[in-house]
Structures are given as C-alpha cells and as structure tokens.
Length: 94
Image (tube, rainbow, N blue to C red):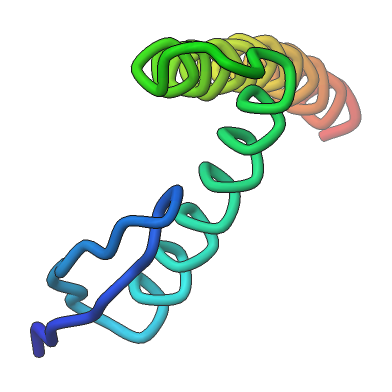
C-alpha cells in the first residue's frame, strides 16, 4: 500500500512514496539524519557553497555505509567460523 509522504531535507520538502509504515519511519529518520549532518557541515563551511555541504554529507553517509558493511561482513565471517566449530564439536559428542 504505497502512500505519499513529505519529508524535509536541509530545508527543502520532497514528496516520496512509502510502501509501509516501517519504510515511512525509516525515510523520516534518514531525512532527519541527513539534515542534521548537513547542518553540521554547513557550520564547518560557513560562507561555503551549499553544493560542497551536500557533497560532504553524501560522502560521510557513504563512508559510514561502507564501514558498516565491512563490519557486518567481518561479523558474518566470525559467525560462520563459530558455526563450523560448533557443528564439529557436536559431531564429536555424537
């Protein structure tokens, strides 16, 4: 059930489609997060170009995303090793 929602990002309104309440909540949280980060960079680049602020915001979000993906991969690899060790242990006691 798609529904139109309005989110505000860095003082500009955007109309989006959300397919669920959860997606709507995530979109609103993302908009708040991007706005917060953009305002932080705007303070750092006082008098700077809005484009630079948004580029650094996007860069930071992307860097965070890549860092999280790398950490998830590392944790998944560790979980796979533990699962193999656990299965080997169970095989020994059978």
